[in-house]
Length: 371
Ligand SMILES: [Fe+2]
Image (cartoon, rainbow, N blue to C red):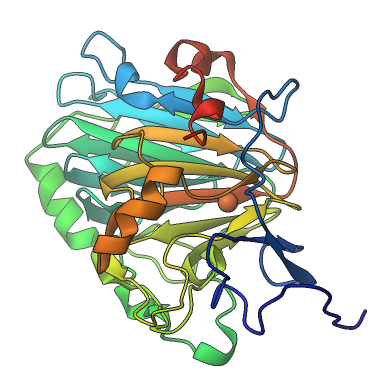
């Protein structure tokens, strides 16, 4: 197809939008495919009613993190390719008896709160608030928290996590591969000398069912060394360098952190706002034409939303047009930086909402775009 223009339009997307008008992007392939920008006199978020499954949702995961909730993965959303979970683990609830192996897929833990270590067959890793912990499929491991730790987990069930294509910005964009940490076998060996007779079982999850393998000794003491390119790793948000343009708002795909089969993960981090006077400073209105969109709000002030707090999770299904909340449009005029930390999961195939989410729903979120 070729580009064409008609009526009121701009020559550069997200810039020079006529006063009182709204730009809506309609694009395929998550901001990298065919795209058009419509200049509208009113935003498409001015609905008066939404009936049917495309109604957007907001959930408050903070309600899950009560001491009486047992240490377990609580499933939030899922499809064949990906499942998301809430996981709270404390020094009291952390298992001293068994290790965990995920035979359903790769496990990406994002640490929302807490700090501690991760024992793995390959050695010890450390985590704190803002760490992604990537555990390859079928590698047994234990989270050992120093204090109460809360994780948002994204399980990749039909493919492996890999780095995003960086294209014209090159290998070091957004994060340098040197930021990935390597498990330390020697440090773990020393740690285990002080913690004897623990982790003599492995609980293996396959097809979401658990099988228990029991051993006479600790399942971490048999590895004497390893080589290869298949091992657990961590990367911290402080080692990520968000890309920006002073002149024009970049799409969410500029913040892509990991890709897997049929879904991507982006990390939104604090950064300066665009400084050109005619640049849009909030996310543009758009439909998720190809992707369902989940955002986990980790920390800071969420500049494009006015009704949520850290620990919330929003769900915007494909086909639902959205953009900044009305109050955010005003608020951003006095700001020079964003202060938000958030993790976005965009999925090609439709997501199912687990019934675990029902008591966590923030009612009437769909009305939050109304003035
Ligand atoms: Fe979106």
